[in-house]
Length: 109
Length: 113
Image (tube, rainbow over all chains, first blue to last red; front, side):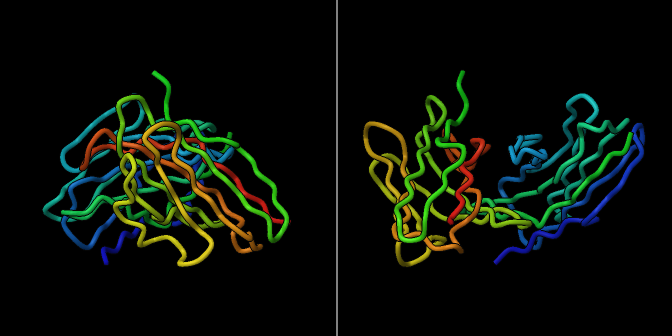
């Protein structure tokens, strides 16, 4: 099956710093989503981005489908950005979201 | 526009009891997916349903687990004779079509005593 690898597994930032999270996948996909799981366990949709670039406030994401990776950029990080960031993909002709193991982010004040 | 609604948020059961988890998809969404998240892990696909049909249940354990999405009412994930290993967060997602963004509910945290 398709493999989804996220890096780094853990990240500690000082408030105000910028960061880049990476997601590599091993097969062509028709869907890629980034999620933030907050400390209360809620899963927040950040981006639906099978290709191209999108921005939403301090967050932006880029997916290069031909090279099978996606990047999530967090600028001017805040303590509320803490949590786990998941990348999930749907392989072509499928519908199951396959999740990576996540990047655990801690933003310190 | 209400999002995906799951209830209960927390459910405690003793070993051997039954657990019923409910999911109401977003308005206009006819595709429902259930995922399970074990502690410290990512989410894993369990089952995909459309109204009155199970499309793919390849991620469901072979025994004790069942799911339905009736013509009227929410989707139900049912776990019979629960065991400690069933303790997890169960998330439901819905989409209007596929491929499309899957929108997730807040999950049900199941604890087995």
